[in-house]
Image 1 (cartoon, one colour):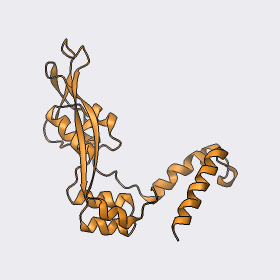
Image 2 (image 1 turned 135 degrees about the vertical axis):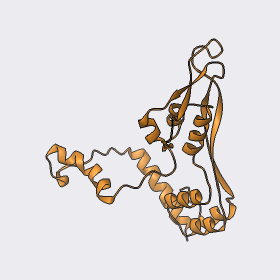
Image 3 (image 1 turned 60 degrees about the vertical axis):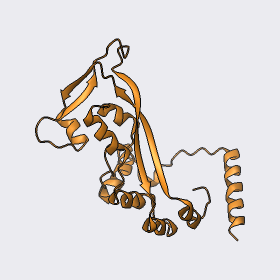
Amino acid sequence: DMGVEPFLVSASLIGVMAQRLVRMICPNCKESYKLSKALIKNWELSDKGDVLGYRGRGCDHCKGAGFRGRTGLYELMIVDDEMKEMIISGVATVELKKKAHKAGMRFLGEDGRAKALKGMTTFEEVGRVCEERVGLKKEEPEDKKAERYVRPVQETGLKPEQVKPEVSVDSKDLAEYQTRIARWLGEKK
């Protein structure tokens, strides 16, 4: 949020691209192996038959690393008229991402999964550079989301109102933040 009005963003935006570089498996020492069930489940791969993964053993060409060169993982979101309306109305980023995925956008993790299955890179390498594994993260039920944050308080034996989070605020940063807010509010007239 840089203070740019949503209608200006939607009027000037035609697409958004994200990219990450991953190491490529060395073609001279590439070998296949059967993926574990945990890896198959984690990457939502088809469980029919033997799913193969690829890795580099290490050789003189890659100096024993098993990787040689790099390739990109990409995701491209095209902003259509419906998406522009969503931006103007201030829809959350998660909703924009869901809409783009339904419209055919492939996430970084999905592109990485495809490249790992082709033998260009490894699943571990894709996991290293991507926040999400494949697509949108599964939605947790509301009680599970709350439970995750409440559990440490329960373990301490204290009541939630007795636990005070430690917050340290640098006065210089606070003053700068207040100045930016004041400037932004002054421009809103």
